[in-house]
Length: 90
Length: 379
Image 1: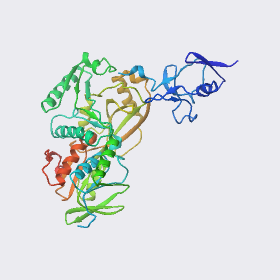
Image 2: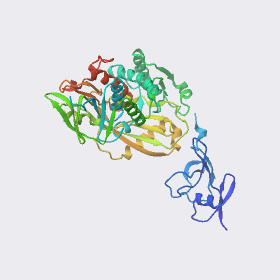
Image 3: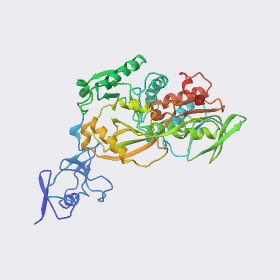
Image 4: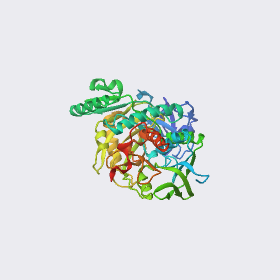
């Protein structure tokens, strides 16, 4: 039986040792962030922690690299709009 | 004079050299700028881009800052493209005694022509909603502004080039051409550059350029670190800093001083300063300093506790023993002008410095008395 984490209200299956990014791509999810200025879609680009394109919000902490964070059944993953902290703007 | 003689050779492609080149080229002078490194590669690139009137008590430096603030406003229209932001400064005090001292300073600045608004503790949140509620009060300075300093230097140099100026990076000054006492140009790693006037705008290294001309100008490095956060929405509206910063700037203590200085940028990251310590040109990253800066910023803006810092940068603020810049003709070496030693205020003071030097080179009466900044005052 494979485990799953919650992503935007649905379950994403993953295997032990898989990253959040890999599990999302394997489930057919290609983008989970929008750019700050033009709102364009972003997902995995480099896949090795360098480019910061695959940023995602995990357990309410934005700007985590999906390609580096190991998937965990207790995590709640949410797609991220821009900088992920729009609610703090003044 | 040889045919390739420039009217003015400017040593240093930082913001002071760039402003000098712009004003001199605009008044019709032929200008060559040389720098051993790149544009804004030294003192300028290590700064935050402050154009402040708030951190200076009445006196010669405040007069210079007021002139410079007005000139930057013009440059933003005339040249532009460097993220000029009239955000205003908010200085805050944590204790009632500190607030009293701040209000007293603001009253003197107001009398000297600076716009000031006293903000009682209960009204601080209207100006800065994320500010800690545990402050005694503050003063708002609508005249404070910010630029992106590297863009400012680059745009001013580009504008100067449209007026015929030449910019030569990777060219190091190795000595001076002389005719008797008179300075008639510079020797460089790319050959001799004859000039009617030479301007020393070498920032922290201004003292070394001066010594090549056989004159003493005591400019020394004071190290400062700045933290850069991940890109954020606008959390901080003004440049916000603690009243202690003013005392730190004026301090003669060699040991580390830190006081929180927090501001947003057009690009999104928040910049967190400011530290000062006299450790020569030691570029070693100091975790102790970074930790102190982060802790002070979080104390001022608790929301920052959950924000990631993505990098830090550091540089050397060029200070003189009396904390005033060096601006003017050097009577010990006619033909040599100095425009250096602005400590942490070089971006802000660059416009006025460049304008005054251009006027002096032209033989005109400068629009501000430069006597307090004369290079030979340290003898």
